[in-house]
Image (cartoon, rainbow, N blue to C red; front, side):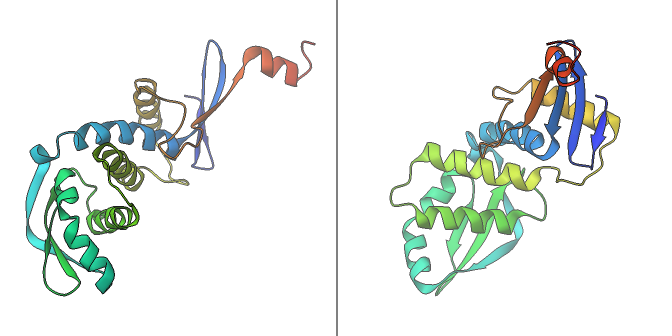
Length: 187
């Protein structure tokens, strides 16, 4: 780790060269792999809420959602019809990012409603992407050197450390030769 640029990009080096790392995309990848594993065992993680979360949908979406409630259970979210187009979340995985639970479940509902046919692996992937984005550090967030180094180490341990779950690149690298070429030290 060398430093941070504009609270958004980490600058790092090793024997091979120089790296610019998008800290949000990197954290999102680390979180995605963690949450993808967690969504593989949602029943183990679901916790009952003392105060259910109430969600409102349009009448047509509410009717469609009633037929698809079992898909939420597959992701560890227990959603109950509460009359009309109102639903209550009575349980969700304990590892959902705190304060983001309602928004995550609403986005999951949008996806479940938009799909013609739902496949469990696709639901697991989509849910992991939603949660990882919400739980990740944002651009313009200053990291301590320790936090930055930990993020780089965790990224290096990922199965797929080159793109975020949305497909954006995480890092750009310049070999020592590339840098020397840029400064016309070699031809």
